[in-house]
Length: 516
Image (cartoon, rainbow, N blue to C red; front, side, top):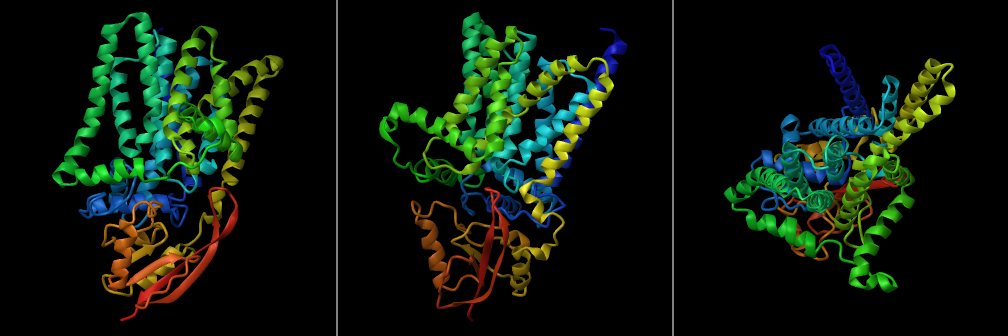
């Protein structure tokens, strides 16, 4: 290829990447309540993570000083967000924009591996991005799954590029990057590692079949090195803060043995071997039925693999189903699960662009007499669908609202009238009252965490401190009536709330003040 052709191709790629990043930023800004267009992110999960992140910037150590159950790297990322803004989610919005941009760019790179694209066909990608980030599993924005699935899209690209351009084995440098990705997943939420385990199995099968043992070893030690490079600073941090035991207890032991116990399963599914297949399969099927947009995108992602050129299809199928099967196996381990667990599978959604562009290329043969009109029409149609998808996002009921629309800020105004107030969110998760008021928790168990029935230490400490009159204010759910001799109800509010189901409903809170 001539130098001038390479320059044109490089310029085209840079322009495409710029357009993809712009589309990703516009999408996140429009649908994530962390963005500047929204008054606040009201989601309790994101607020728990942000409170831990803020705690780190104030010298508090996760698990030891503030108890939560996700991985430490997630809190370090939110600590970076807190350094940008301690009382808003602007830093979280920037983080979401970065991850969405990675998803967009690498999804497009995957598409271009297997189909010949024309300039106008990039109009498909904004719609893919919008469909991915307006899924009900996205909720209000900022969860661990959302921040991690773009990393898996990068690994997927490495694997597919090796299939298209080589013998199916990734480059040595890519093995190192994959090790770092594994470290990110492990230290954010260790159940996410299934994809990378499947990727490793795929590489192992391929290398053994090719008898390429020397190269396999080169990949293995670089992969391990990447994991160690990411993990070492995290372990050193907890060691230096005398908190390794707290890390083990909160992140590993409690999650494995105390969180979401299994319920009964029907018939043969109770047999251990069958159970390990039944739970993941039944879970993903239920998720697809309950959330049709997610289900259709996942189904189209699977179908797209079969449209890969025949000479690449066998290895592509092996890579896809090895990673997909292990993702399900590690994500759905119990019969009780949270709706957003399956969102990690969004790493495959970029494959839908491959399917659509394949269809466009075949359809365009019927309109060869007026190709310009057809190209323009297709571009406009996809952009209209993109705008409609954004407009119909469940979160837009909060867009452009003032801060005092939210109870978090109305309560903060009251709470901050007390010098150096101590507050507790009792029997309800952290919905942002600490952040809105600019206050840090003053005790380890600062909110409800869905583990209290198996971990009574949380309620024992909270009830003891309430009896002692330790807190100046207590916030509870509006639907949780509480009576304490030394606290009085001073305010209660209800407000419109659209949850992950997309249904409108009432939510609310009660504010109690200590009786002096």
